[in-house]
Length: 185
Length: 234
Image 1 (cartoon, rainbow over the protein chains, first blue to last red):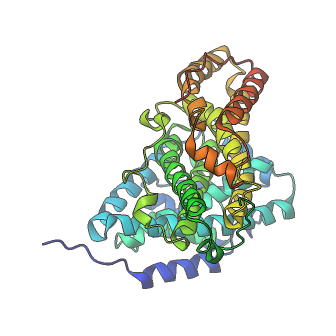
Image 2: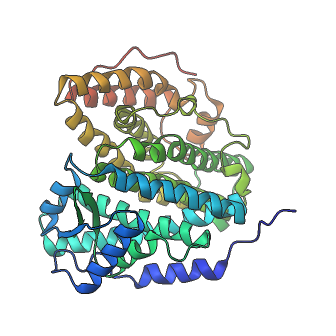
C-alpha cells in the first residue's frame, strides 16, 4: 500500500510567511553580529566543514570578486547538492510527484520575484553592483528557499538549509566557502 | 471579419472557435517548450557552471524559465485548458533540440546566445497580439528573455578570450545552431496563416526565420564565431 499523502498546505503556508518576513539583503556589508557567526558556524558544520573562519565581503565589487574566484571550494556546493537530491527523493516518496513539483515551482517563482526586488533595492542602496549581480543574488536566495522547502517537505527540520535560510532572513548573503573561510556579505 | 480585440479571458469565450483554438495552441506550445527548456538545458547547466557567480546566475535563469512555464500554464488554466496538456509528454511534440541533453558549459552558453534569441523573436511577435492577456504575458516575459540572451553574450565574451574557450564555444554553436531555424515552423504552416489572419501573430514563419538568421549571424560575428549551414525548415 502506498504511503503517499496530500501535500501539507500548512507547512507550505508557513514557509511562504517565513519568506515574506525575511530581511532579504538588508544587512549586506554591515559588521557581523554574534548571531550571524553562530548561524554561519552551524551551517558550515552541518555540511561537514569544521573550524572555518567567518569572513565578510565589504561591498558588491568585493562580493563579485569572491564569487568569481577560481579557488572556491566546490565540495561546499557538491555537499549541498547531494543533500538536496537526497531530501528531494525523500519528499517524492511522501507526496505525489506532480503536486510536489508544482508546489515547489510555484513557490520559487513567487519567491524569485520577491527576492529579485529586494536584491535590486540593496544594490541601489549600496551602489557599485554590476547589473547581473542582482540576478546572481536573486538566484542564490531563490535556491536557498527551494532547498529549505525540499528539506521541510522531507520532514527534516534541522538541515543545514535551516541555518542557511536564517542567514538570509537576517539580511545576510552567504557567498560560500573559499579555502578556510565561509564568507558572508 | 477578422478585426477582433479580446481584452480578457472572459471575453475569449465569445470569440470565434478558430480564434479560441489558435490561442489555445499558442499557450500550450509556450507552456510546454518553456518547461522543456528549463528541464533539459537550464537546470542541468547549474552543475556545469564554473563559479558560484555563474551557478547562481544560471539558477536565476532556470527559475525564470520555469516561471515562464508557470505563467503560461496559469493563463491556460484560466482559459479552461487541462493542466496535463501543458506539460511535456502528453501530446505536444517537443522541438527537436530538446532531444539532445546538455553536456558542457559551452553548449549552454551557445544555447543562451542563439536559442534564446529565437525565443525573443517568438515573444516579440506576440507583443501586438489581439488577445490582450497573451500580449501582456509576452510583455512581462520579454525583459527576462532579453536578460537570458545577454547572459549568453556575456559568457561568450568570457569564453572567446582564450583560443581553447573560443574553439569549444564554436563547436557548441556548430552542434546546436542547425536545429534552431526550424523553431519557426514550416513555410506553408496552416497554423501561422490562422495566427496572422486574426492578428494573433504578425509575421510569416519564413519572415521570422530570415530575421533570426540575420540577427544570429550578427551576434555570432560580434564574438568572432561563425554559423554552420542551416538545415531545411521542417
